[in-house]
Each structure stands twice: as C-alpha cells, then as structure tokens.
Image (cartoon, rainbow, N blue to C red; front, side, top):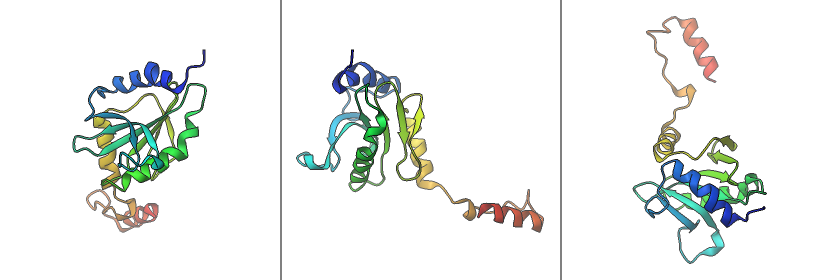
Length: 163
C-alpha cells in the first residue's frame, strides 16, 4: 500500500500533531491550506499544508507534508519560501516542520539546517524557542562576571573564546 498525501495526513500526521497538544478542530490553533501570503485569493504564493497559530493570530510554525513514499526533505525550499512570505505579514518568521508521517524534521530557517525530531512540538515549546530566537545575545556581547572571573588573564581568555 502506498498512501497518497491526503491519506498520510489523515492517518499519521494529524495524529502526531494532536499528540503534541494541538486541537485540529480549533481554527484558532490549527488551519489547513493557508496561503503563504496571507491573502486568501493569492494562490500564486503557495499553500501551507498546516499552519499552527499563537493566541495573537500569528503563525508560529508551518507543517509541510509529503506522502509516505517521498522524503520530507523534498519540501525544504518550498517551506522556506512559505516561511519567508508569512514573515512579511507578521512580527517573525515561523518555524518549519517537514514530514511524511514517518519522519518529522524541525527547521528554524534563519539559523540552522533541518534536524530530525521525535514528534511535533507543543505550543509552549515553540513559544520558548521563539523567545530564545528573538532575545538571544551573541556570546561576544555578554558581560563577564568578575565575581567568578576576576583575574585579568581569565577575562582575556573569555574574550578570546567569545570571538
């Protein structure tokens, strides 16, 4: 049996998203086939398979689905484009999940390469990752705690490592 994408979504992906605590029947949390531009009649910009929402109405993550027989990585560039387009209409770029129902990959398209994960993330987990992404400080900009590193050679070592 080689299920198509719709069957894969219904029997595998929907189940995994629900397991992470997302309510697929609540359009304030999850919506299906949302245009990436945010304009309902602009099909040219592409359609996300799933969009996961924050309470303020912004999309925190998108899920790009493929049939089981295809690698989720085939949706990589498509998903990145969607995330970039969504970012134009909200305050941040959403995270991306790529899946074929068997493999699930998570991707912060601004900083890293996709990594395989055991399942979809709950809203709290995604909010925590978003907070970190928006508030991170470069190591070179962090202040040195002179209570624990009071000697000049220690401070110099920390500065060099930070570069």
